[in-house]
Length: 103
Image (cartoon, rainbow, N blue to C red; front, side, top):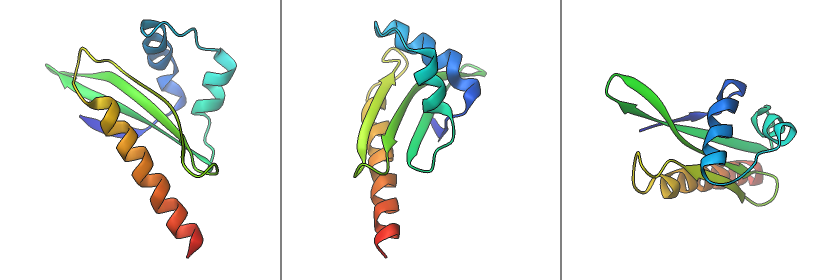
């Protein structure tokens, strides 16, 4: 599993994953989510399936709002525990940012 920062090119994969979860994503909100903002962190997870890297999930956290966790959506068929991994990575980064700002 590889975690990386989200980018605008991830929009179709995030849109498809949201639909699989019964969520109709708003294009404008999705665009805002993927636009760079120092007050927000959005990461994606990719899994190697055979020789192909497959989009497996994403999560977001607001860094300005004391680390308020945003949406976390994962493809549960690809892996177990990915949602918890993404949430922990986001929370850990938010804590590090808060500590750096306080110093």
